[in-house]
Length: 139
Image (cartoon, rainbow, N blue to C red; front, side, top):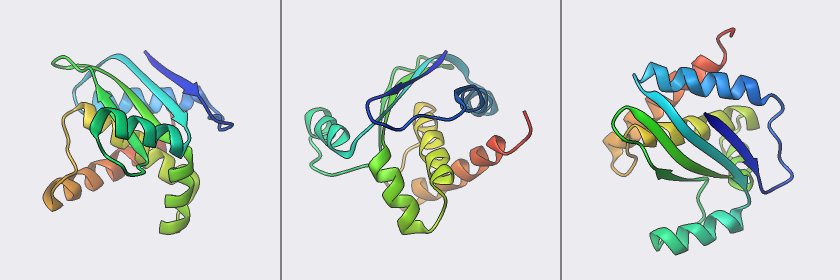
C-alpha cells in the first residue's frame, strides 16, 4: 500500500494517480509493493531528521528509510516541499516534474540504487527520467 501524509500545507491533487504511477514504478523494477509512506514536510523537519539519523547538517530534498525485504518494497520517504520548490526554480522546470523526480528517487533508493559517485548519480538520473515517463502514460 502507498500512503501519503502531510505535515505542510501542500497536498497532492490526485493521490490515486500518484499511487497508480508509483505502483508501475515498483513493477517496472520487478518489485512487489509492501508499504511505502510518503511524508511531505518542511526543510526544517527534514534537516532535523538528517541531523538526528544520519549526522548530516545539510538541507536535502528527500530522506529515505528503507524497510525492503528482498523484492517486497517498503519504506518511509520524507520529502521537503521547500527544497522541491527551490530545485524546480533553480533547474527551471515545473514543480510537478521536480516532485515526480524526487518521488521516483525515493523508490529507486528502496531498490538499492545509490547516488554518491558520479557513476551512481548518472544511473540514478537515467532511472528517474525513465520512471517520470511512466507518469505521463495514460493510465
